[in-house]
Length: 170
Image 1 (cartoon, helix red, strand yellow):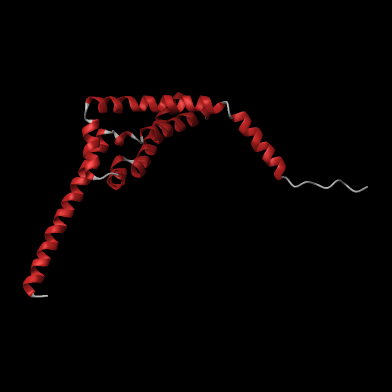
Image 2 (tube, rainbow, N blue to C red; image 1 turned 180 degrees about the vertical axis):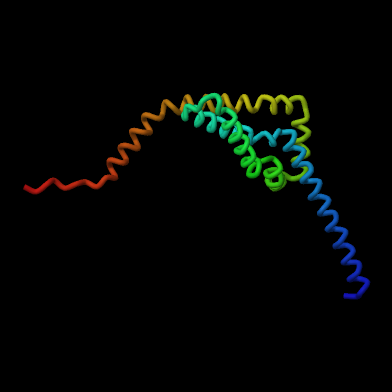
């Protein structure tokens, strides 16, 4: 390869790598924009609420006097800080961006953004948490009707798996 050809190839490769980096940055920016629009930063709110509730329940179980409420609040704050270190949005966001850029092309993310920025898309985003919760309740209610039968089947299987004891010899 001639020196001029090698130089041209190197310039072309550098130019292409810059375009790839720009494309990756744009792709990531669109994923981040989608995640913000979808309120992904709020996904861990239930986890925080559940931990807060655990501390409040433990406080109540201990029959702690109201004068110790500051102690509860201090521990709840420490728990929030521990959660922030593990699942705070700044910790989760880079992985979420990778997840979405891996699952969707840049064009697909642009299409998702266009939809979710539309009036119908905004309605979907607003209604989805409520619909998800109602769907879970509906499924749970239907599932409860199957619990007795499933428990009976588990019991029957367990009985069949238990070793049969031979009758005692006389």
